[in-house]
Image (cartoon, rainbow over all chains, first blue to last red; front, side, top):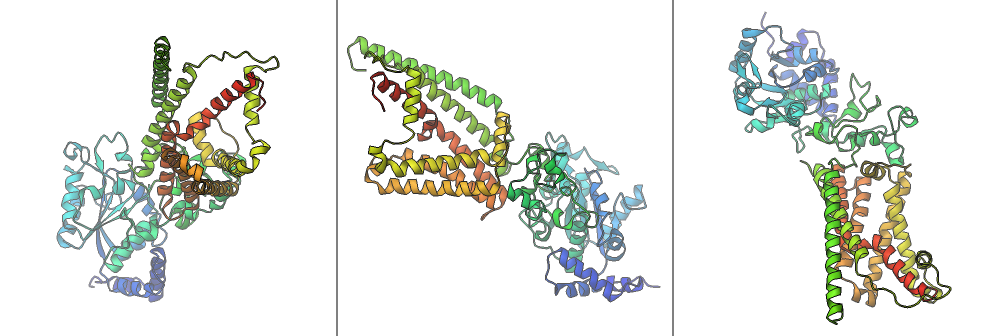
Length: 355
Length: 219
């Protein structure tokens, strides 16, 4: 029996009805903030599209992004892998290992040259020629350059791949950089977060396959539909902020009543993501709903912003030494100025001049 | 480094240092100046210097009847502006957190709605003060760039603070950064311009009060 050529053929072979496809397309349209009539176009495009070859490269990361993706509820990871994409290389999810795994990547690159999508999670070590990260004897830097050369587009998932993340945090021993610092000649979508919301990853991949183009992106290359608002703007605790009702500690009366976590260091007002609307685990909860402030993990350099528990309105510097030095200098200059004034007066008095 | 990182980090550190340097310099200079000895004998009923200073300072808090008409607007408007500014500065939760991080003390915050009202009243009061300065020929004549710039650096944090709280016209991180930078500008200018009156008003009024009380003059 011949392999189905399009996603539509594959879905009908698996018994998924046109109605099921339309429901799925409506969800994608909603997720990516598209008008409702686009869902029909999505369904038609998906039915006619070929399964997209995807190569997933994991570099300096903790596998949290993959763990998050496996918890995608809609589209589910199984749905994504078995129906929409051909995940040709993913070190954590693929069955093969060793040379066979590397051959799978090279084979996908040969057979789909110029057509495959590269998903990157993790930052790329560049110091000392990139020796701090290697897979199968090749540096991560080399693997990225080789694989990206024939890609149609790249998707950076997670804050490590999008902005350098924790490996890039001070003192950054490996010279970790994000994908956008290295690849300049290919379209790149950033799905930041530590980890990113699973639906944000799956939805963006689905959008790219469906339309064959990038969604509208913000100034940090993130889809506007998912990163267009701050957590604070959509937070259910926002009304308490407006009223000036704040939890002062994680176990006080304010915390129990669900008041705003601004004073406990919540970075929601300056963090763009969909956590407050899409939430996690199929819409069950998100960090603020669980009682902890937002860490701002989907923003650049979130690890070095002065501490997770320091409120946004507080200084991040350590001015004690500077202020102490300034005080001593001010006292010195003031004393010298006054002494000079006294001397001038004495001189004027002794010479009979008017001081 | 983003604008907000710059504002929360180096900008505030530098402004704290400049503020401390300037205030220490100017206050010590005033205290150590070669004051002329008052050779006039004190009246028999003259109060001590400290009591005279306190009485005189209290008396200056409100103009005498003879001047009430002319000074009513500047006095009332001045109080409205200063009290409004104090309520907004010391009562708003993020400001208390800021002060706590610097001085280590904290107190309960006021409702955000009340802070917004106080800030708007302060802003209106500042605008009226500027309008009065422009409208009065005498005030206009004696006003210098120092006066106008001091007004500007006082009004800027109020405007930017209101915008940040209301999320007006720009993303919050930009508005918060602009607000913090405006505070940094105020702190840097403070010791070298008219804003230093916040400290020197106690010196000048007390000195005047002591001078007159020693001569038996009731202010």
